[in-house]
Image (cartoon, rainbow, N blue to C red; front, side):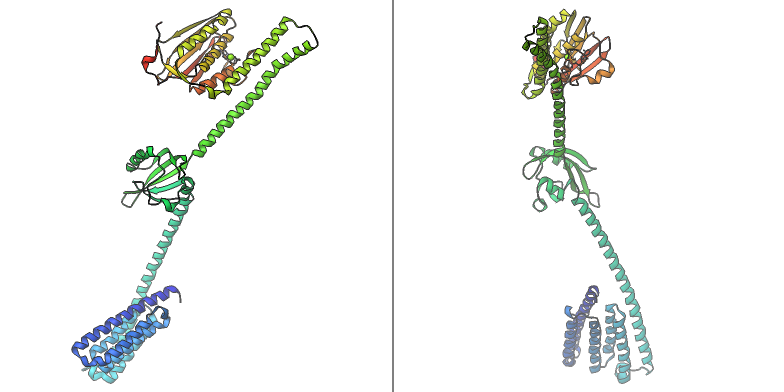
Amino acid sequence: MDEKRTTLIYDRNQLIAKLTWVFFTITVLTNALVDPLILVYIIPAGLLTCLVMTRVARKDRVTENSMYVAVLTLFLFFFFLIQIEPILLNFIFIWFALLLSSIYHQDRPILLAGFLTVACTIYFFSFYQEQIFPNSDPVDVIYFSLFGLFFTVFLIYSSRFTERLRERAEQKEAKTSDQLWETREYLESFFNHMTDAVVVHDRHGMIMKVNKRFEGMYGWKEDEIVGQRVPFIKEESVDEIYRLWSRLDSGQSDYEMSHHTKTGELIDVSMTISPIRNKSGEVVALATIAKDYTERKKTEELLRRSEKLSVVGQLAAGVAHEIRNPLTVVSGFIQLLQQNQKMSPEHFEMIDSELKRVNTIIGEFLLLAKPNDVKFEYKSILPLVEEVVTLLNTTAVMQNIKIFLSYDERVPHIKCEPNQIKQVIINLLKNAIEAMKFGGSIYVYVGSYHDDYVRIRVVDQGEGIPDDKMTKLGEPFYTTKDKGTGLGLMVSHKIIENHHGQLRFVSKPNEGTSVDLLLPKSTHVSTTDEVQISK
Ligand code: ADP
Ligand code: MG
């Protein structure tokens, strides 16, 4: 017998036992008023019946047979009752017993009860007709028995029907609970195997649930954090996040901020907060899905560094190459000296120029290699430009070139490392001079550009740069000059990048080149500090 059937029979045995006790009590009470003498019989017999029923209804006694024992005991009691007091009222209790037997919703106990009912009817009709059924015909026993039979059949069918209904309801319930379980499992596995941390909390930040990834990412275990306020928001973001929670009614919201973990470490997360609603649409909780992008940031930084390293590597190879040529020349001359060969002044000039070249290359490199030493100052750009122009003017004049400087009335300050910016302007002016083999004019303009930049524009009338070479500008060692290093623009780019500025070229071959150097305006000093220049 399976467990389900056992509990079923057990439940019903219990019910019958209880009903028997109730019935017994009522019988005793009514008879105490009406016919106290009969209690002498009823009390022992009834007590015996009730005890048997209680015993049958015990959990460890539940068997298929317990049903028959219960039915039989009931009938025995009523049979006894009628026997000692054969009246119609008592006889009717036989039918009551038949009715009770249908409690099991099974054919056999009902059939047994039906059989006993008919047997009792015939018995009492035969021996006590006068007392129980006065004024009746002896043939009436047939009708009584038939009635018992029909009643039995009716009970069988009606109990089969209710049993079917019960089974169906049970199946449905089992199915629904299965489905519910599946959905729950599904969600749970989804929740716990997500690669992002999920934390569910109410609008006051009280945590209801976190997933496994959350534990890994933040360090708090679920049982130590559930029921607590979210502990990972930085103090300065608390107000902001509460405001966000309180107005999060429609749809989700994406956010980026730093959180701290249990150990106090800061992590950068991008998070999506979405409301969870109940059936009537009220927001009952908020789900925050957080993705840690600290690692991504670190990787990016690594990538940037390795890129830098590869540029340095590339440069080193180039430098070796660039320096080796002049050194070969110098060492050639030294060999000549060793052989006591005579050296002409031109030879010394060549040695000198080659060594200068090595020096220039190394000089430019030092600038690149020491970006950490730079000290930024708030400076007016104009004096810097003027200095450079003065410095290069002699060289220019020697090549038949005139440099014209003009500037806006008010030029904002910039935040810069003055020597580096001078270096850049020298590079630009030198390139302009070197591009103008046949002389001409160079115009330098200093002024504001849009609202945020200071612009230094250098316009020459030189050979220009072909379109297909534009992208090569700033590549290490790209030069079209015999004595060029191809490092000037590269270094300039680097410096300008560190200043968050830009370098822009516009050029037409054989007409000239215009270079714009844009540097961000400083917000540090007030306008009164700006240099006032009258033209
Ligand atoms: P270098 O001056 O040593 O050649 P740069 O990096 O300063 O190295 O310049 C690289 C190259 O860019 C130059 O060789 C030249 O071909 C081109 N270039 C730069 N500025 C100008 C300019 N104003 N006019 C024409 N060409 C230029
Ligand atoms: Mg140059």
